[in-house]
Length: 237
Length: 237
DNA sequence: AAACATCATATATATGACTTTAATATAATC
DNA sequence: GATTATATTAAAGTCATATATATGATGTTT
Image: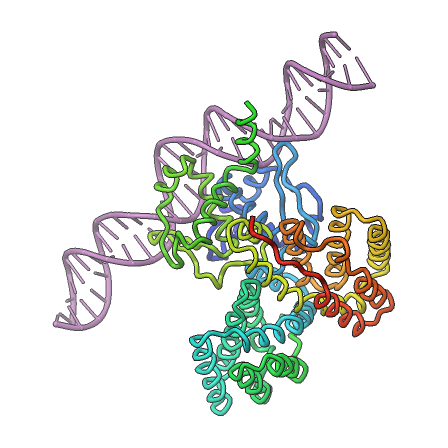
């Protein structure tokens, strides 16, 4: 049995995801141009040496993320970039692997500056008792790790802190950012913050404002965090 | 005869999308509980009376939106709510059809208040010459429609105006909001704004600030718009 | 020239066989 | 008895192929 296309064999996830990722790579790198018709199902099946089932599931995945659109007789077309759902964690994961990380990281920071202050304000107003307990426990962990520093533990706690804020807004539209944040943190681990860059003071301000139910103060504290943070830009892999 | 037309019209989309929508409905309404294992492929195929191909494509669609997760031997599990990607236009479309619109609309407004001011600020700074031309042409259309009012035309132009701002940020993460906005506008058409609620003055301020490259002014103008707008809450269908 | 019928082709759906994965139970080992 | 191999097995994953359906292109009728 000759594996003609071992290019995919390295990955571990299911076949159709691997294929989807490979097609996504070609789209994101513009190797497949926007609005272009990609090769027919049969052609792609032969190229990847997979069944139509697997290929079609891959295409469905990409269609759902706004990258493709299929029509009978016409074929499957690459949608224009403004349809790509960059707030999809899986797609974001692929983007990070394939494009200029420095630019992505800067764009992400600009997103955080819009979202997080309002999220903190909403959390201050709407967090449930249970969520406040979780937030409290997480902040205390951050405080402890700040004093007994461990990089991985800090990253995990920092991420959990901001995740909880999103969840505490009580707003469905803020939920996806928790996953986007997780994806970004995991990808840029080692670039985001180091000892001395924990900004524990700013985090404490956010925490206290939320617990006190002071929306305006929570908003401002989060703005301060994003401005004061030693937000290192990632180096190229 | 005309009755069968309606049936056909009601089931317009492809089979796997219809099935996905139906499963999504059960998940969103919590008829299928979070973390619950849904019936096996074979069972569902019999229930819906469809092939495994169609069912599996439906499940792939929902998996991509964060609603499901499949594992061999275990089955397919409903993921917890904080994994649902509410910023996916298609999912949002389904959500709007199935849940309390008033609550969704309010949550959406809270999202706009976070996103749009920053988007306007970024657009003021980064919009390309081409984008400024498009924005200019769109605003002039808005101005005209304001004086020769036509509801549908206004809605379309209003939507296009805000869409162009998102596109003009030069930030990939802001792109998806354009589609989310479109979905919301289309769904809440008739509820969003009426004659006298065009807020042409506030829109003009945003437009001018962006054209002048004044980020702070653009941000503030958009805040003013969202605060002053006669943002009617939708009535129940 | 407009309406209609036909054809070609790409995706959409269906079906059945086979493979891989992983939870669970069972047996072998210490 | 506790631990560690091993077999069982149920579920999704993959494959191959056949048929249905939709649509752009072409031709035909009026």
